Every structure is written in structure tokens, then in C-alpha cells.
Length: 315
Picture 1: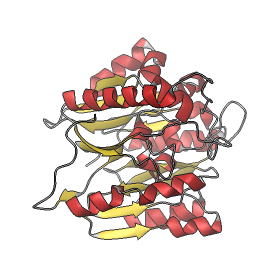
Picture 2: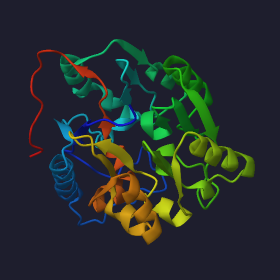
Picture 3: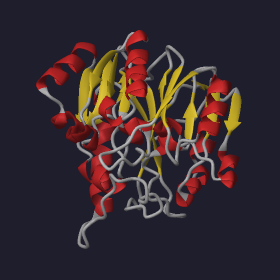
Picture 4: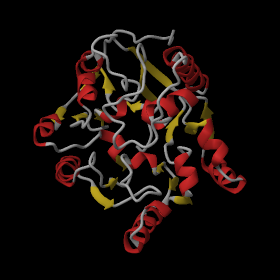
């Protein structure tokens, strides 16, 4: 199963520019002095949740705690992932304040309500300065069991090997850089893989051999490849995620910034394979340096027979 109908999102309490991650996330922009970032982010978050629910997606909302202050809690996909075999993986995070997100109640709620057959905890690699930031660092083709990953300070080869060995995935790794030749901090900024379509900024892979190998692997796995430009990458067009409605309808979620950056032909191709779902997260993108996909943690676990109910409203 490539996609899920259930996602977890973290409702922010103190969303702000994260100085801890800004050194290698060139997408982050500081707020203006008079700007109420938290208020804007909250409105965008609630609108995002409502849009998903209107399209038949189950959204589990966890309200963030004010302390300790974790400005990037709104991007939960980086520190944990779940898998249909019942695996739950915890990841080593580069940002020190991002590591605190693991202790803010999300795991307790997951374990209370979902069956976890095995836990792979890689967070101890932080002591060795070895990082792998979840489905930010990796883009997973769950059907074909392929892990796509662009190397960076946040995506370490050693940690990747441990993860793909545990999950039984094939690794397709490469180097991807921005206009300045700096490694792109997260793979899910430059590519996304769905059931039948993949978007990828092949132009960000400078080595011709690696670029050709990436395209070939996507195509041989049965994906229609939509190649993005560097300008579209900078508009977060690579940061999409396919989910499905309760009725099984494929939905491709992205920010409105990403959708606006696409050409008419690219939009038509997407509409051939899925219903596009653009959402307004302008402030979150600008201040946080992450987009629509980063805000969704996919839940592939099976519920216990008797569970408590998650929040049904985001307010």
C-alpha cells in the first residue's frame, strides 16, 4: 500500500522561526518584527485540517504543548514513521530542539491507540552526530519497496543502510543541490512518489549518471515522472504527498504556492492520476522552511480493538 487515509498533524502553540535548523535550511525566512506568526500559522493549520477532512481524509490532531518550546513541532514526519507491518521507527535529528518533540505526548497516544509490533529506535545515533530525519530525509515507494534519498548533513549513509536493511527496501541514493551548489537538506523538498505519478527536480542532481539513474528507477517502477525546475523546487513543488479518501480516491496534497508554480501541462498530468488538493500555508512555509508534505505524518498502523477518540476538531 503506497498511501494511507490517516495522517497525524500537530496543532502549533508557539510556532516560530527555528534558529536551530536555519544553518542548512535555505527555505526559512525570519518573521517581520510586528508579525503575529503564531496566529497566522494557527489559521493556516486549521484550514489545512478542514480541507483534508472535507476530502475524506482521517486527520488525527495532537495539540502541541507550550513547553518545552519546539518551534518545528508542526513538521512531525521528521522524527517518526510508521509502516504497514506494524513497525514504528524513531529517527536521529540534527536540530537539538527538534529532539525534544519526541517527549511531547505523541508517542504515548500512538502506542495507546495503535498496535506497534516492533520499534526501531535510531535516535541514539545523535550521540555520534549521525542523522536521518524520517520521511524528510527519505521518500518511500512503499509498493516497490524503494527508498529514495539525497545525501546531506541530515541524511547519513550509515543510518540509511540501517533503515533500509530493517525495512527490506532497496536504496536509490544520490546527491542533490540547490542553485548555490549546497546539498538540499531534505529529499522530500525535491521529490515526491505516489501510486502512479512522481514529481522530481532532476535538475537539482548535478551528476549526469545519478540523474539518469534516478529517472530510470522512477520510470521502471511504473511512475509517470513530472520533472520540476529549480524555480518550482524553490516554490515547494517537490513537497507533495499522495493520500487517499475513505472511498479510495487518490489525493495529491500540496501548498498553493507549489500548485501555482506548475505549468498547465504539469497540472493536467497530475489531474490524470489524482485530485490535486492545494492548501494555503504561506506563513508556515516562509517561516518554517517546510511545506504541505512536512506537516503530515502518515499512519499505517492498525488500531487496537478498543481505543480512545482523537480530537475530531482542530480548534
